Image (tube, rainbow, N blue to C red; front, top):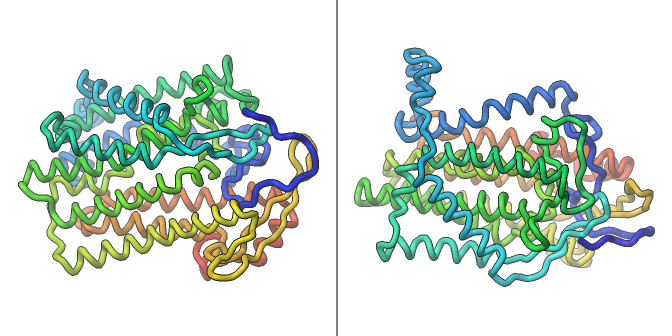
Length: 462
């Protein structure tokens, strides 16, 4: 990765959410932008490391075998205890490993081989400038076209994926833990850039990661693969899988499944159209590659994010044309607003603020900060368009979109709405972390920004 030359300069224009230009501190410390005390942060890490894997199995088993009823699962546990839970835990099978390996190899090949525009990422804390190949859209449409084609021509039945879903999730849980151990060791012995290092605590390093931009060789970016090409791509692949499985089970795809799956696919399509913008966010430019990001994308995304449609496979609810269209239109509007928020920010960055936002030149604040090497730099903070409504307004339509693709399952059970609740907590926590991090970075300039854009997420409320 190239190094940025030292000197007093103006950095790329941003709203700054996830700009990644601050110095990385040991995770769990308040210097890292954590809104929690080190003790609470450490306890949270241990809790998530121990609870997330069994929760994935619980969610799968309840959605697939207990009609999405958490109360049925609770009754089962009261009767059978821990041994009962261990008995229902599926063991990874050869076919599960084969399906995962085939999918991962296919996505890795697309990431390496498909052509794409050269995209420059934000300057890292250590002064490195990551370079990416933007071929996500091509990979996305190639993946879905291939997947549907091999089903259509009878070469592979995607229903097999659903039939072995528990075994696949178990294999992903184990395989992703091993992969995170590999990342931990790599960060110690063969880091890809100077944006790496240890906090001095093995658990923190494993959880938060050692490297900001780990790569295999010069071309294969690990975080792009785990976050985008495996995690987000699996969301779309599983949405199609669930539709095909329901069709095989009932001879039709219910309007509820169509609405939910279409909204998910529209959202994932939006993501890949915006993928180069994602490389400027907190996930890529600030959070290191460890359990939190990589295990989350490899396991949590395909299991939890797809759970509303997973529930609908065996619950072909009929909504009727009017309700279906209402939910679909509302969801698409939310996804568009979420996209337009990101589009405005990308346009603002790309043009150095010399653009029109909602038909007018954008208002902005020039915020100066100092890097760890003592350089004086500045960013432009956008205060126009959607970014004048609240500092993280784009989270509002994202949460609402998740609600609308869950709504076709109606309200018979609470568990299908877990993803909406999880996403709300995640994004509110992220907004607080980002605000604290930016306040530490910009000082008085961030106070000026907050006076101009008063609300954090929900305008008029919070």
